[in-house]
Image (tube, rainbow, N blue to C red):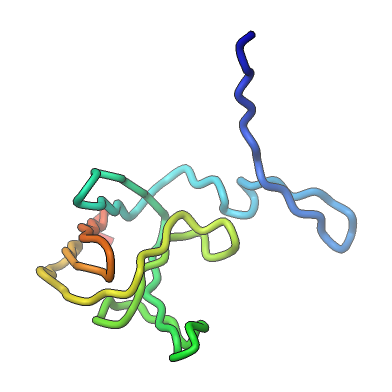
Length: 119
């Protein structure tokens, strides 16, 4: 017997008892502006936006930033419980230029490209 694969689409229920599907929440994105590739296995993730975040000594969110730096983690949109990907903390920035960064984290090496470099 073959199994039928079902696609799960996240929904939320508003205060007015209206179901909002993933597209309206930005969970399903049609246009991507960023592409991240993990070096060891070629894992590729894409998102509309990226954010760089810092954690405090207890491992709790401390601050968000527009620029990468050692000690920050990359998070890919959407910026809610359905985020696309989050890296561990950056330990080294290998190369950085307009629309591109190659960096090492605590457990992986990544390359991140801005797909629409003219934006």
